[in-house]
Image (cartoon, rainbow, N blue to C red):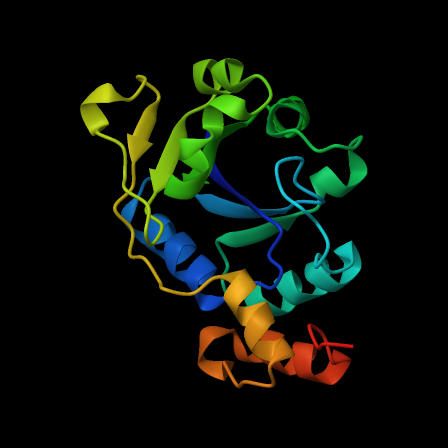
Length: 194
């Protein structure tokens, strides 16, 4: 089986924090590939500042170039809306029976994981790895279900929200983004206040 970790996100935009987590998992855990799964509007979040799917997909392609174990999946853009993780996982497993899919979830999302559609089914059918997020406590490992474990990857005190706000304020956060993504945002004049 090909061990494939799934890193879901809106990647609005992709930043070095995403790359740090994925790079750590690729190097220190037993995975063959990490698929960045571009998500449309999350049913549990507001989408007022979500860029068009095509622009976010372009940023992923630019930002992940040069990482051979990182792949992009746009599967959720083709599935019925709203997008539910259980549907994506089952569709991917049906399309790729040679792969063992592992769901990566940030500690922030683990807190409301019980609200996800068919969360019990996800845990019973797919391994789930929780990675740390700034300002969120990791759960106690002894209290986790059998297929759920904690990954002790580094954390990064930046978020896509903060980056969008910085761009809107005319700030330069070049060091927080892959260079090609930063250049793309500047060229397209994205995240600016109107």
